Length: 247
Image (cartoon, rainbow, N blue to C red; front, side, top):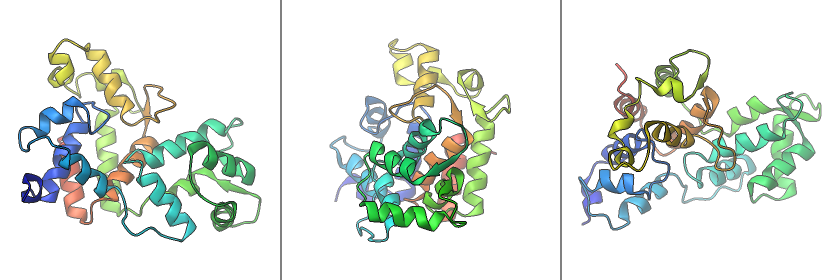
């Protein structure tokens, strides 16, 4: 039996969440290798296990669930990445999408849905038959369902990071909150403190649009992906509190 099979699932996820708090952006980076080497031989089994946690073995034929599964298959940042794609397309800032914008956004993000499936999703969300859907309502429908206790602890973690209280976490917010000097690349002299901060923020950003800022919506979108892999509310809340050292 492998070492990872001997570990409690919550312990695996806790290590992963703590790893994310170091600013690393990929579970195959040397930073996670370093953390996991404290408990396991590094032979790829941890990567395989964590990927399984963010995928669903039974593929749904219901269009909205199918879209959700495809986003989560990209990892915890999958829904956040799709949200960023649609936000970039919202030139007039209306926070609404018509059918053509919706179809184009799905195509740009590389989602595999038929036109009929995409139209079905759009029709479900266009409740007033206005020909547009509300961007925030779409995201709310796409996120895996989360209990109020999960949303609350995610909000607490964000508020801890957002020192200025302006709803956006930047490098300046992280000073005095996040200890960059414990990051392996800072210790090795490869990165400066600011580079560690930016790397941390990028872990919540879309790969194609890194702006060095994290909104509460992006934070929630990210952790909705993490939440999807954890069945018990108590596990999730405890792990978030431990990862972010919440009182």
